[in-house]
Image 1: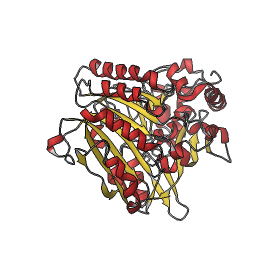
Image 2 (image 1 turned 90 degrees about the horizontal axis):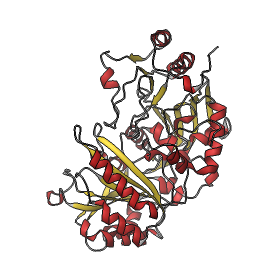
Image 3 (image 1 turned 45 degrees about the vertical axis):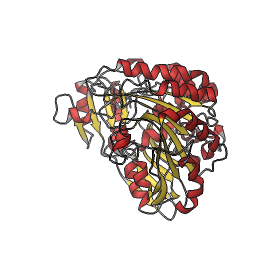
Image 4 (image 1 turned 120 degrees about the vertical axis):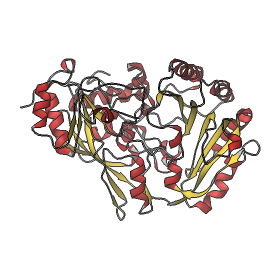
Amino acid sequence: MTTILPSATLSPVTPAFVAALRRSFAGELFEPGDDGYEQARLIWNGAITRRPGLIARCSGTADVLATVRAAREHGILTAIRGGGHNVAGNALCEGGVVLDLSALRGVRVDPVARLARVQAGVLIGALDRETQAFGLACPAGIVTETGVAGLTLGGGIGWLMRKWGLTCDNLRSADVVTADGQAVTASRADHDELFWALRGGGGNFGVVTSFEFDAHPLGPQVLAGLVLYPAERAEQVLRAYRDHLTDAPDELCTGLSLRIAPVAPYLPASVHGRPVVGVPVLYAGPPAAGERVVAPMRALAGPPLVDLVGPTTFAVHQSLFDRSVPAGLGYHWKSHYLPPLTDAAIATLVEWAWRLPCASCYTILFHLGGAVARPDPADAAFEDRTAEHALNVNAVWQPGEDPDPHIEWARELWSAMAPHATGGVYVNFLGSEGEERVRAAYGPGKLARLAAVKARYDPTNFFRVNQNIAPGAP
């Protein structure tokens, strides 16, 4: 029988644990000093440098079961890695074991039922490739290297959310290894409270090894692209943008990016290094029908510097921001939910957005509403469906650079925007910010319900390397 140890006793990896796991593990195991260890411990955020005592790269669910059971028996601190793209770096733990799901990359699409079965190591670029082969898409993120698992468990903001909801809203079922080493399937019909918690509650409740999603007809051809305006017209652009959103159809998926134009092959050299307001646009419907709807975004407060909106493929548009977030740089995020933009909020954004410590930092707003706002708020753990925007302030620095000026800029902009925010925050945009910010992500009612689910499925808080929800203690 597996010994259940309280979370306070969880410890670093021991030789006895490694020996026990080797007897029942079919995947790859990496200890410090092994060939491949240094590469295996790399994650997207280069600012995170934790050194696990063991990385257990699972080959299937049997390896996940073996790792959870052995870690429980030996009292080993455990982290879960899917895509490794989380800004807080919760895919790694210092000295403990990383339950690495990155090799589980199977995707199976049922084009008749319009369903996609997705393993926990799949990145959204691979999901798009498989679904688009059948003219389908699953609402999932904005960067192709993002892991489907972490994205879904935190909610799932993405290009298609206004049309078909968050990634978690499209989840049909999930295969889960629980803290007591059992394999269950959570859905509306079975383990329904666990299923509720998985849709927004993060990695607190078990190791999800595969997901089943609804897929929707889209593409491959879509009307999409990017419009750039000069920063000196930022206030006029943001006000016009706000006004056009009041009656925007669900198919119009947009955002705002306040930044220095990168040196990118898709941009003319005349704008490289120039402060700009970027308006990424996607029409989630037939391209011809989108021309009239998208037109106002192409003429906000005068002619744009660059207009790259046109027929393209959904997969190409999904990679639009990839060059801005390469793996290995240092990242620090600060985030708010915002109501509809007021003139005062716009003025504050414009005042702070270009006080940048370097050209790699930027601020982005994701337009919510539409199908994000429509479900019953109590239907899933995700919170807050009333917000109009998710603001994400991105401090970015090169390896070897002093991170402090970059982090300070992000914190100052975030603090300046606090009076204009709802008080809530998207949990996937949180860094290591403490219990108060976790509370802000869920609110007292949902946090109490999540704590009750945690008490049922993980009463000793075994899964605690995450935006943690303590069992039974809202």
